[in-house]
Length: 407
Image (cartoon, rainbow, N blue to C red; front, top):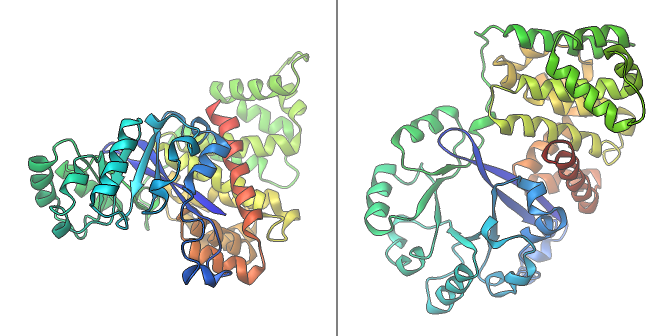
């Protein structure tokens, strides 16, 4: 199984919900599923597996989750299959669900059980045909490139005033800002939040400069614990965070100084903690999803290291994933951003030139997180990697993030 979470933002760049994209089988490795076996497992709501496995609060904190259903799975025992509160689940119907009495009755039943409903894939000339079903819906997903927002606002406000519009495939910040100005959409999905800039014209803030100095200290060969501790001492928030993590590891020890705490953590763990904590701090004035993306990529890259036969480079792959959005964090082109921190040649080559062995892992992670499962499957076939290993690695990432930042 392959599964990933896609964020949906509001007009203020806050993440309001996630969509669970899931694929039961590798369709390239099992081409029969594209033919006569295309209905195998069709009655299963695949998104529930990852939600039930992790727990919805661990996945999304207090947010909702869109989970796709089709014309077969809509009639499965969704009420028992979903272990989460129905109030946090938005069932997303695709266009295979037709606007007839049978489907409308089932949708009405699910709505009465507490689920929210959404629909995607409808063209403008289908709205009247689906009018009875649209009255049940809470959200409709629209492509703003194919639907004039002024026309959509006029139509839906007149006929379905309670229906929230969701813009999909919003892939640039300019497009997002233009749409938010028109105030027609409630939510936005796309790559716009992680599109890097191409020219550097901003200065790094003083506090960020301190963090970058500390990153350089710990990423230097055989860095000194005392030097790192002294830089940490300049920032109260970092000192508190360091003491908290050390106290969790050794509850009965008395911490006498920041240097003492650093020594207790040890060089390897201190380096990993600093890289993680500082990246989070550097993201403080960016959408929270950038922080989450950076951390998930880092842990996913580390977990994939043995899968890609690069176990001895797990630490470097963690750092590569962590810094894969450094250009967005620092508002600078990637090459200029990386010149401010010390990274290995392999990490630099992967992030700037998109070449080298590390780039293979990075490109796979990007395809996977975008739910480009056909491309991810192609890479897995070439490298003879099983779906189960990748899925296990990703689920562990979500558990790690939840344990670290949501509990």
